[in-house]
Amino acid sequence: MNAQRSLILAIVLALVAVAATVSAQIAVSANDNKVVNVNGKVNVVPNPPPDTVAIIDLNASPPRVIAEVQAPVSVVGPPLSVAITPDEGLALVTAAMKIDPGDPTRTVPDNRMSVIDLKASPPKVIATLEIGKRPSGVSINRQGTLALVSNRADGTVSVLTIQGKTVTLAGTVEVGGPKAGGGHIAITPDGKTALVTRSADNRISVLSIEGTKLEHTKRDMIAGVQPTALDIVPNGAWAVVGNFGGQVTGDNDTISLIDLKAKPPRVVDTITVGQSPEGVKVSPDGSVIAVVLVNGSNRPKESPFFNPGGKLVLFRVTGTSLSKVAEASIGHWPQGAGFSADGKTILVGNMIEKDYWVFQWDGKTLRDTGQRVKMNGGPAAIRTADK
Image (cartoon, rainbow, N blue to C red; front, side, top):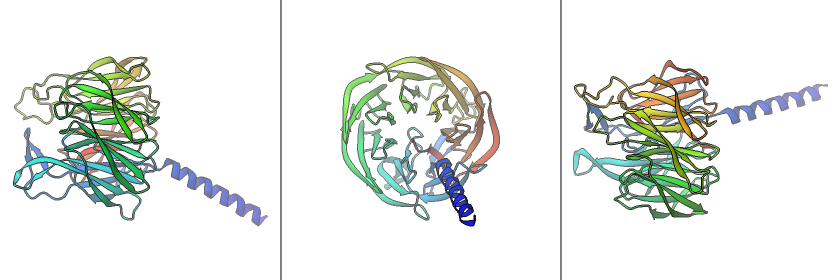
C-alpha cells in the first residue's frame, strides 16, 4: 500500500513539475540609459550608466524582474530589438546606436548584437557579435535554429545560425540597400518566409528561407509611409505592420493588414490609429493586435501635437478587415508591448517613466491594473518567446 501511495505521489509531483514548466514564461526587456527626453528633445546623458537587459517573470503577480544583465541596447528603431529562443534559453539583443567616442554629446550607429544565456545563474552575456550597421529588429524561427536581423542603415539582413548556445553569423543579404533602410523582420511559423520592413523607401519585402539561404523574392508591398514595426499571427495567416508616418508632422498614422495566404502576399486593409504606432504585437492566440501609440507624448508641451500620454489600442482581424476594440491611456514616449502566454496580461513600456504598465484583457475589457514594473533604464524593447 505504501509503495502504491509513493508511486501515486511521484506521478502527481511529476505532473505538477511538467505543468509548472509548461506555464513558465519570461519576457526580456532592453533598457536604454544613454538618452533622455526633456520637453520633446532627446539628449545624450553625460557619463551614463550601462544599458541593461531585464528578465521579467510573467507568472508573478505583478510581473517582477528576476535578473538583470548589462548589455548595449538602443531606443532607436522598432521596440523589437530583442528576441528569445523557443526554449527561453537565449536572448539576442541588438544595439542600433552608441555614444560617439569622439563626441559624448551625440550618438552614432552601432553594429553589435549580444547573446545572453538566460539559464545561467545568474544570466550573462556569452558572446558579442558584430553584424550590420544599425541592427534593429531581430527574430528567431520557431525551430530555434535561425535568427534574422534587419540592419537599418545598410538595408541588409544578417543571417545567424543557432546551435545550442552558439550563435554564428552565417551571411548578409542586401534588401534594397542603404536607400531602402530597414526596421524589423518577422519569420512565418513554418520558417520558410520572412517579411522585412524598409522604413526609408516605404516597402515591405518578402524573403524566402531555405536552411541558411535567404533570398529576396522580389515581391515588395507598399502599405503606408515608413513601415517599421511588424508581426505575424501565430497561425501564419496574416501579418500586421505599423506605418510610422512623417513623425514630425503630427498627423495620424496607420497600421496595415497583410494577407499571407494570398499568392503572392498582399496588403488587404489599412486603418488610421493615431500618432506614431511605435509598437505592434499580436496576441498569442491571434485574437487581437496591441498597438502602442506615442501619441505626441514625446513632443514639447507647447507643441499643438503634444498629448499628456500615449495610448494602448487593441484591434481585431475579421476576415481581411481591421477593427478597433479597446484603448487605454499609457505613459510618455511609450515603446513596445508584450503579452503573457494566455493573452490576458499586457505589459507596455514607457521610456520617460522607465517602467512597464500592466494591463488585463478579458476579451472585452482592457483594464489598467495600476501595477508598475520599474526598469533600470528606459524600456526600449520587449519580447517573449515565439513558440
